Image 1 (tube, rainbow, N blue to C red):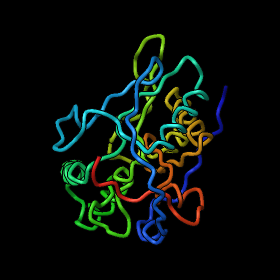
Image 2: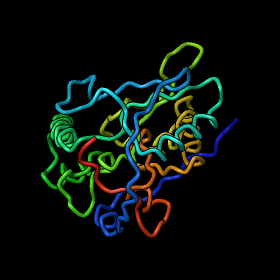
Image 3: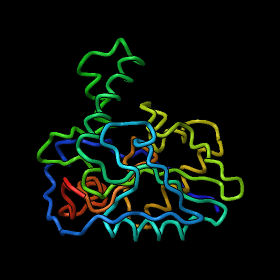
Image 4: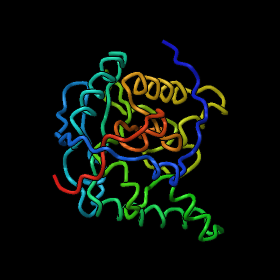
Length: 229
């Protein structure tokens, strides 16, 4: 099945997102369990990020919708989940790490340019009006793998690569490639299951939080910050 081309969406404007009210529904976190077409690789625990947990926690409705998406995915493919709920300490460590990467890659950037690029990829953990999406339990990072070989699919960039090629629709401007098809498949299937996608990150999907409310035009978010398991 061929999926439609991805179109560019407005990049995140943190002020617009912070203005969306949160009506916390109290839904608990639950642990995601693997099976043959769903494998778990908590990326930040594997990378030794301080405070990262060695399991994937998500709100219960997020897990239910992820299972819907898996059913929509052709049987040849599986999902590899890389991250779910994050403690604030992890968000702080990731923001510091991304800042270093940006400065190494773009030594010519001013502080304003560094901050703007950083905000595209890692939310500020200290914005009281807008909790980091992953800290709500409503965000999930994932990629795809081939169930016959067990190998991860080439999605065009690595997970968490801080470049414009990581934008979901970035490959649409390039010659056709398998990665272009894989991105289309992933984004369209996740949207069918009720998720929204951050346009700067092909791997990041939301349900219930302010990101989701903004991109699906809801009046309010369902999930706020979860500080403890």
